[in-house]
Image (cartoon, rainbow, N blue to C red):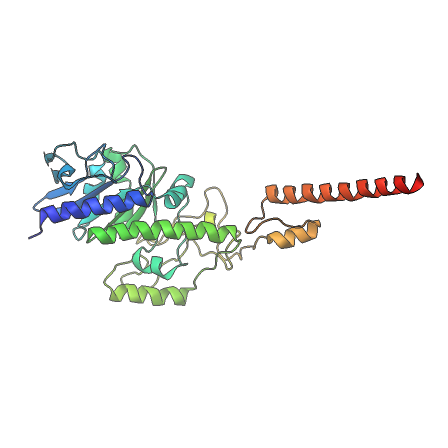
Length: 325
C-alpha cells in the first residue's frame, strides 16, 4: 500500500527540481502519479512547481474528474491519462518545457539517435508529436502513435516535452537526460561535427537495454535491428557518415522520411563544414573568438583587418610627410 502523503511530498520535490533547473517557469508544467484503483494524484493549475505544497495536489479519477483538492487540477490531465490508459506499467508522468529540448520542438526537429550511450539505453529515439491545443483531447491523442512505439519521452511540437516511467524519479530523470542531450547536440553542431555510433555499437547498447528489461521499438520480434536513422534535418552537413534511410516498415519501426520536400540522403556521405580557421585562412582573415564560423564573426575580423591596414597606411603617410618637411 503506497503512502499517499509521501507521494505528494515526492511530487513537490520533483516540482522544485524542475523549477530550479528552469525546466518550468511561472506556473508551467504538470506532474501526476498513479496510486491505484483508477485514481491519480496530479498537480493543480495556476501553482508554481517551485513552491507547491503536498496539500495543494489534486486527486482525480481515470476520466480526469476531480475527487479532492483545494485547487483545480491541471488542465492537461488528459495528456497524462492518455499515457496511463495506453501503458499499464507506467505509474508517473512529468510534463515540462526544458529549454534545449523545447528548442528542438519549436524548430520541428527530432533529436537524432545513435550518439550517446545513456540516451540509447534510457530514452531510445525521441519522437516529435504534432501540435494541437494544449489541454484538449486532440492534444492528448497526438502522443498515442508514439506510445504504441514504446516511447517513454516525447517532444510536443511548439510546446515542450513529456516523460513517463514506472517511478516518478525515473520519469524526472528522463526529462533531465533529454535536455542535457539536446544541449550537447547543439554544442557539438556549433563545433562543426557530430560523431555517430555505428550499427554494431548500437546493437551492443540495445542488448544492455534488453537485459535491463527496457523495451525498444527498434528491435523487432525476431530480435533484428530496425532503422537507426536520426534526424536528417539536424545531422545534414554535420555527420561523419551516411545517414540511414528514414523509412518506417510495416511494423512501424524506423523514423519518418527525412526532410519534407527534399530528396532522401540515404547512402550519401555528409559534407563536413569548413572550420572557422580554414575558412578564415583562405580569406586572409584572422579569426576572432572560439567555436564560431558565422558570417558575423568573419565580417568583424575583416573589419578589424581593414582598420589595422588603414592605420598602417596612415602612419606611413605621416612619416613620409615628416621626412619631406
